[in-house]
Image (cartoon, rainbow over all chains, first blue to last red; front, side, top):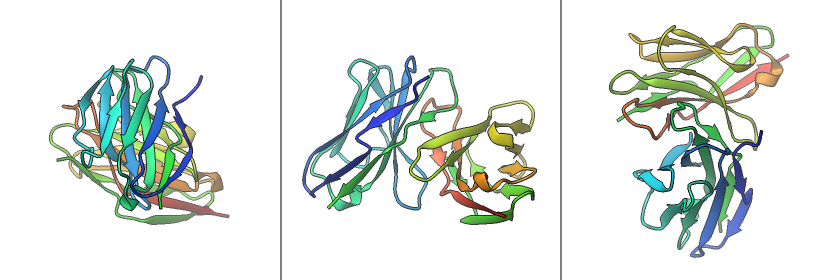
Length: 113
Length: 114
C-alpha cells in the first residue's frame, strides 16, 4: 500500500519568502506528526495532529511556523518570512491512533538562500 | 524531559561479524523505545520497538534489540552484518504518558565492509 508522501521533495527559496510543505499520510491514519531534521542531527518534533486538531504544537520554534490539517488527512506546514536557519529536511509521519510506531515520509529538503 | 543518547557517531564492522549500536535513554516512567534506519535521501524506516514484555525484541532484516531497565539502555544488535546494512541508525523514545512526540538520538552511522 501507499506510504506517507511529501511534496515537494526539494524546495529552494529566498530569505523572507513564504513556503508551504505538504504531507499526505497513510490512508486511515488519524495521527500525523511533523519533524525537522538538520544536518547531522536526529529529527526534532514540531507538531502533532490527532484528526483535525493540533494536539501538541510545543515543538514549533516560533510564530513563523504554522501547520493545518483541515479535513483530518492531508497536512500543510507553513513557514512565513523564511530564514537561512530554517534550512533542513522536514519530515512527516503518521500512525493509527493506538499504534506506537510512526511511519515516515521521504521528507522535503528546504533550502533558504 | 525525555532524552536519548547514542554515544557513537560511527560503528565499523566487517561483513559477517556481529554488530551492536548503542542507545541509552532517560524518561519518566516506563518508556516506549524504537529503532529507525535511514538510507541516503530516504525517509526513516521503522525497524523495531519495545513497549512491554520480553526484553529482547526482534525486528526487520534480522535486527534485534535488548531492553535493559537497570542500565536504561536499548542497544541494537545483529548476529551477522551485511554490507547492505550500512546506513544511519536512530534510537528514539516516547513517554507513554503522551500520544505524541518521539525524541530521537543524534544517530549512529553503521559502516559494514567486506
